[in-house]
Image (cartoon, rainbow, N blue to C red):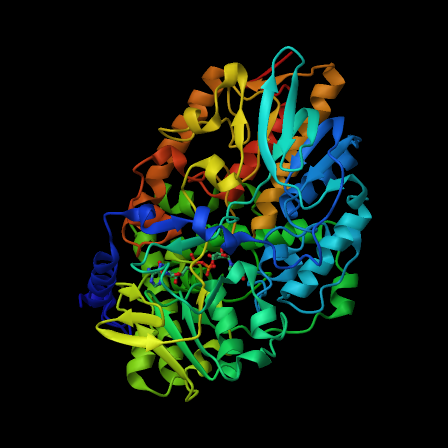
Length: 627
Ligand code: NDP
C-alpha cells in the first residue's frame, strides 16, 4: 500500500490484482458463440406458456399511419406519446397474449424490479397510479401495463399472439408492408421497431444439452404446470423434485429463494456470482406521492440517472444501493479536497449555481482541479468500498465459509447488473440447497439424468435455465423478422459489419422506420426512461413531418456517418472500464469494442437526452431528409 491508500480498510492494489485474475480466467475466445439460438429442436423454449388458448382469427388486410411492433413499455410509450401528439391511426403488433413485453414473459417466482417503481413506472403523473411499494413486483407491473393500455385505448388497436415475419419497404407506394405469421398484410406509412433488447432467451452450448430426459425450461417461460405456485412462490409441486438452476444473474437471484423453499433439493450452478446488496423494500407513503409537485417524476428519474453517471446533484432523491457508490465518491471528495476545491464542489452542487452545475463535476475536475485528485482513481476507490460491503454481507449471512467465499463478486459494481435481495443469500443456509461453484468455467456436461461438473454428476429431475438473453447477435435474429428497405437491402446486410444509425433511431435505406433500443442511443439503468425519451423524440419527428406535409423521412448519409463516428469516439470513454470487467453481456462477453459503433452513447444518457432535446428545440429535423 502506498502512503495515500494506507488509511483504507482494504488494499486497493491487491483487490485490483484479484479483479484482473477473476476476469482473465473467464475470458473465452468464443464470446457470444458460446450460446445456442432457441430455434429448431430448441424452439419449445420460446413457446408461450401463459395463454389459455390459441387465438383464432382471420387474416387482416389493413392500412394505417403507424405500425408499432412490440407491446412492451417501448411500444406502449410510443403509442401514448403519438396519441398525445394527435397521431391516433396506429396498430400495435405483439407476439405475446397481452401487453407487458419483458413483464409478460418474465413471470418467474419472485420476479420484481430492482429499480425504484417511482422512476421505473413511466407516465405515473398521467395515470395517477400509486405503486404499492418502493420496489414493485411482476404482477403489479403487468397490472400497470394494463392501466397504460386502458388509459390510451390500446387493446382496441392491438393484434396479440401475432408474430411479425417481415417488413418490406415499397418505394412506389411510400409504405411499409408488414407481414405476420397469421397471413396479415398491413400497409403502414411508418413502422416503429420496439422489439425489446432482451427478448430472445439464450442457452449455453453445453455438451449433451439435448440428452437430458427430465423436465426443462427457461426462466422467461416459467412452467407453473410443473412447479405449481405463481409469481409469489408456493411452488408446491417441487417438494419431491431435485432441481438444478443454471446461472446466477438478476433472474436467478430472484427465483432461487422460492426454489430453495420448495424443492426437495436445489442445486445452483454458478459461473460468476452476482453482487447482492440489501433490498430494503418499503410501502409507498400515499401522502408523499400525492403531494409531489408537477414534473416530479421526470426530475426524480433524471436525478437518479445523473448520479449514476457521476454528475453531482443537490440531493440523492432515490437514495438506494444503485447510487451508494456515487454518494461515497462525493463524500470522499468533500473530505479529501483541499479547502479551495471543497468550496468549488459546494458551489457546483449548490442550487445557486445552475451554470456550474450544468458543467458537471467531471468537467470541473478535469479543467480546474486535476492537480488535486484523479477522479477515475477516486471512483475506483469508492467502488472498492462499496463492493467490500457487498462481499462482507455475503460473509455475514452465509454460514458455510466456503460457500460464502464463492458468493463474493470480485469486479466493479456496474460490470454486471447489480442485484438487491434480502432472501437470496440466506437460501444457501438451507440444508436442501447446494451451490455448485464452477469457478468461472461453467458446466462440463449435461447427461440424460443430470449435470456434470468436475467429474461429479448431480442427478436432477428438472433443469431451469436462468441463462439470460441474446445481446449483440444479428438484429433480425433477435427481432424474429427481417427488415427489407430501399431496393430490398436488409438490416442484416446493412449492419453486417457494424451498426449504422442516426441517433440510434433512423438508418439510411430504411425510410420511415424508427428503431427503439439502446444501440447508438442513451442507455439508462431505468430502461423505461430511455424508451420514454425515444417516444417523445418519435412523436416530435412525426408531428413536425405532419405539419410540413412530409411523408418520407430518412437519415441523410452525412448525418448518419457523423453519428456513427460520434458513437465510436465516445466508446473510447468507457473502453478502459469495460476491458477490466468480467465478461458478460454488458461488455460483449469481454470482446470490448471489436465493433465500437455497436455501443450505446458513451457520454451517458443524460448528455444524450440533452443533446436530443436541443436538436428538437431547433425544430428543423437537421440530419433527416424530408419529402
Ligand atoms: P444474465 O445474462 O444476467 O445471467 C445469465 C447467467 O447465466 C449468468 O450468471 C451467467 O454466468 C450464467 N451462465 C451462462 N452460461 C453459463 C454456463 N455455461 N454455465 C453456467 N452458468 C452460465 O441473465 P438474467 O436473466 O439473470 O438477467 C438478464 C437481465 O434482465 C439483467 O441483466 C437485467 O437487465 C434484467 N433483469 C432485471 C431485473 C430487475 O430487477 N429489473 C430482474 C431480472 C432481470 P456469467 O455471469 O459467468 O456469464
